[in-house]
Image 1: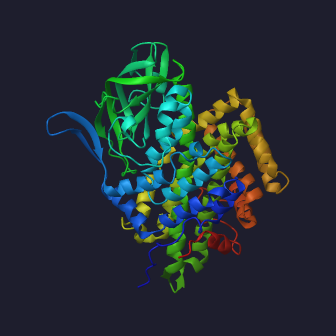
Image 2: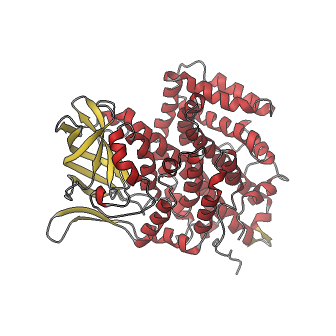
Image 3: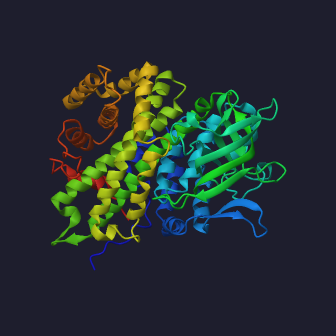
Length: 538
């Protein structure tokens, strides 16, 4: 009937050459078996069904029990819990903290990227638990109390005192409706209870991610200024904290996951880090979740490319397989190149997290995360949309995974700062931490001399950065260019020669479509091999 077979029972890791190569290159080959097993599981019909079921049955809020007592509980479909069991059981929430060895962040990035292709929403509490650890370590006593539970492989849902649980998950509550990204305008108050850091928090949060978690990092105004606090859902005596869920957000995508508005009514919390330095304290959490935005975007791109290349390899139109028709090959190869460039960039930045003890790597990480967050999250939206179009009407129906990927794609560009926030953060790093610029160019210059087009692009970028007058209004243009030059450098050094050549020709010398339309490459002979590199095999 000219219908492709279901894309099931294949190994996502074995089908992803750029990821396999990057895992080795970033010093994480020791995690091969872990990622390989996740790749196998992610390709099973059972796991794929979990993703569909979790999204078809979104979480439900129960504010009160039958006696009228507040319980503020969120109920999830069993498929959600199965997804979480796999994620936590494989250490996606804690691998670098459980195994602090070279390549641990890169290993975790590869595993998170693979498993997120099954379903993206449940990655939210997984990501925030992973990211909360470095922030919490700024208060060693709190870290000693909570970190052992944050790093176990036991998924233990349900609201109970953390001392009675096998494992805990963390969420985050920063933004308020009057401020959004401008968290310094927060009005939530923190009233001290004594000298041991205990406070009572009163106020609201417009976006509280994953309100079913066991504890949260929260920003509130203490007497000494905006500060960071650890707020548990349940107090040690078993009573519920003053954390009330007003409603769950009705979101465009990410529907399997709960996002909420909350009211804090004298909620007990304890300060993390220094008073008045809440943003600096929680920024470590933000940096790690921004990395996960890049990983999530790379994951969406890869799954979209896998679906599109599989569909077109089995679908005939006008007497030929779609994958044998030159224009479709052009589109698919263009999508595959974008996906490969993003995967290599994602893994390189994860490697910088592993090597952050090196000042050059720490400076590169500082600026590269914001650059990649800005660019890759936007490209994911376009890639998924084009991959959906490769399916025609078959891609527009819910039985296909493409509508879910399309709804999910804009999230990473918004979460942890939308495009302008991240573009301006790059400028802030350049102005306040000039060593980050040196680290960036130190990285991209490693490929100088490999291709004249690339050398010209580096020189043009340096001219673009000077003079600094009017740089803020040009921030998006500048950061976009920084991202593409960085990807080009990585592809020249580590990618397939054909992929690098097409990337440079299309992305660096203005030979792409006028609106960055996919499928406008001028190459032809090289494109089929690029496409075959990315097509999954059953």
